Amino acid sequence: MVTVGIDLAAEAVRTAVAWLDWAAGRAQLVRVEVGADDALIVDAVMDAGKAGIDCPLGWPDRFVDFVTAHRSGHVRVPEGLAGRAWRRDLALRVTDQVVHEQTGLTPLSVSADRIGHATMRCAAVLAELARRGRPVDRRGAGVVVEVYPAACLKQWGLPYRGYKRAANLGELGRLVDRLLEVAPWLDLSEYESLCRASDDATDAVISALAARASALGLVTVPAAEQAEAAGTEGWIALPTTPLNRLMTEE
Image (cartoon, rainbow, N blue to C red; front, side):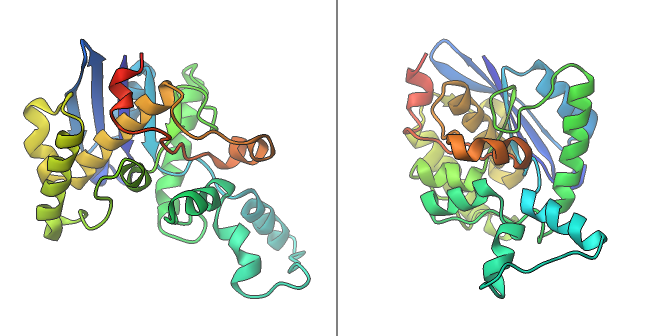
């Protein structure tokens, strides 16, 4: 199995793609591309056994309804609510709220934060995949699954904060050290130095690991009452087992 991890940003310059080849008791990082454009991303997903994308796959349903109502001048604030209380479901998807409940982390709001730009790009990528015969189930059942590296790291007991940006290369290096310590079967090969220099590359690797967890069924899935919203909004698959299960499960 080859799993792909995509750390998707609004522009190619901050986008990274990683390929992990799972064979012979090892997971080898066989390729990393930083500065990935849409064509490379689509090709990578088309050839993957499973691909984890670090980006929201959709917007909150209630936000979409809100914008539609606003366009026609029919916005109504729910009775008994004010301020943030009534805006919560506009800013956060069902999966975002579940992730917060389970991990204490709150994903960036796709409707109220700059990550919306990345999701616009993601929507175009998903559309191209559908045109090429690989439609995406936003709940994660198909080739693509939505992932959240920080939450994965926290679930696996690894450092999950403070490693972003050039000023924190020391913390990024410590994260890579801990990752290799916990997962001695992970071979970063000639790309280890890149992972230590680029948090985008490292997040792509984490996303590829999360894709493996999803392929093995070792992640959270929507409950029956969450499935409809997950189908349009997207669903963040959280690992449910220790990292070493990714290699021992076959």
